[in-house]
Image (cartoon, rainbow over all chains, first blue to last red; front, side):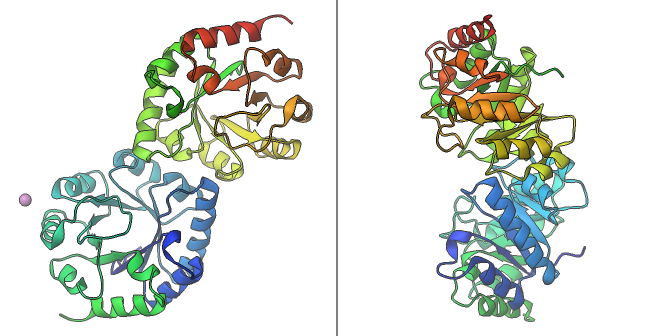
Length: 209
Length: 209
Ligand code: NI
């Protein structure tokens, strides 16, 4: 599968406010989200499984791959398109061997060393950040800035997606340093109109600069 | 592997008090624990993996199987001897198909219906409870009593282990209704001397009645 990393939506059921969680995601997919990650914390396995299964069905309608965050077992159980892991998750080499080579494997990195390690251990892409300071609960320390993102892009040979504090106002800078896409949570899910938010982001991203 | 369900210790790193977690478990194994389950909540995957891996090594020294609670991915990652799931975990049929038929699969049940479902879906044993009221944070509702335990034992053909509020003072009642073993957390781990606690429990359990 050719993966389009342009607009990568990560879920958080606690950030949709009054909106219906699945509707908010469906509208965002309709608006132009190209990749979807189900990332839910403080949730029991049964609920995570049920949410992931439903999102897989929704994502499939849009021909968008569904990636599971952290939980290799959920990814296997719903036969997700991939898994995204970070520094506090299972060891990446162990994950790759269980997940198999055909699934998408993403790896969070906040510096070149982590990114190179991820690439070496079998990651298909790097989620690099937090680029800018953010309120979302990401597994990230201090912001790495455009400089940190650029360094990661320059050192690995796999796609790099920027994450953390990205908005319509700064995404051209993310693109300018060579990232293959932008990843957002609240920048889409917390917006009143998730369709519009996604549409504006993808249009801005695809603009010739 | 022939499994001895007699004295089944379930972990909780938050219940060992001032004692070293791994020492407390090692002493309990030395005292006579026959089966070990690593059950840790509110923990990231990396830490759960590291704890489970270490406990697998410790359990192996005592020839005791190590079962992982809830997290199928951790069980696969450390190649555990089995997995224990409950009503709020992944669907048991999905779990069995991913785990494979050679691994031990335990299922929590608090009534006959759940126990029969677990047996039908491939469980190797049932963890039935809570038998008595307990302070430990188990995935259990109200106590089912000896009557509830007895009903489960009488309806399934796989081993049943009693759990919840079991102590040296009531374990003979658990045995009398036909359970194959007793499962404890704080009844061992919160005791000052986990070796002595386990030893007294197993001696009492093995006593001819
Ligand atoms: Ni360099």
